Length: 208
Image (cartoon, rainbow, N blue to C red; front, side, top):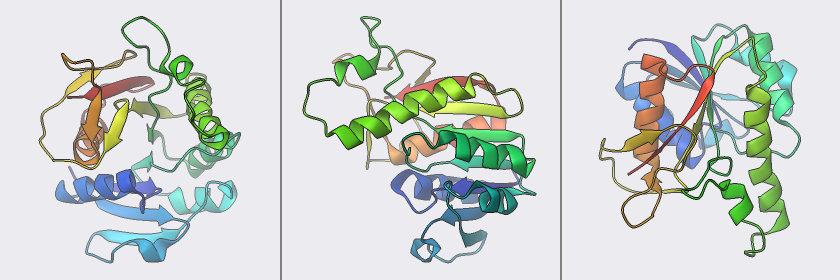
């Protein structure tokens, strides 16, 4: 695969792994972050400043790319700014690192509904809820060829195995009921989606 991809939130845990995976497949990457000095300098990567809260500037940065990937954290009530930046850039293909809270568990209950009253700080809950709202907004989006990629319920550091299972709107879990994925394997599946386009204007999810 040879293409020019913009990664918003490229300095974060997931954004870094996505950038690595894109480079390994021959892409050139514009790595966008509020603090681009935190992005390692290397061949194939151009680190630039960008902030979804300043959509006009971000749109200019995104212009001319083959695809945009957003790995930025959710910010309460600000998803419209991010989507407008992508839309106004003229780039059609958009992939979003989503959240797991809008997935359904094996009882058919939204993961979000299982998070209430378990001691999660209100500010964290608000950002998780924004992930649900972002997905709802994308489902109404007609201008972009979007994909919303929900991770497993638990995502974190781990091995790069290349072996995982994919799903659509339901949590993927193992025989013990655990839903986990490493940052590296999540990045593999996301770049696979960029290459293959199996979930355009849709959502999918992942776990071991």
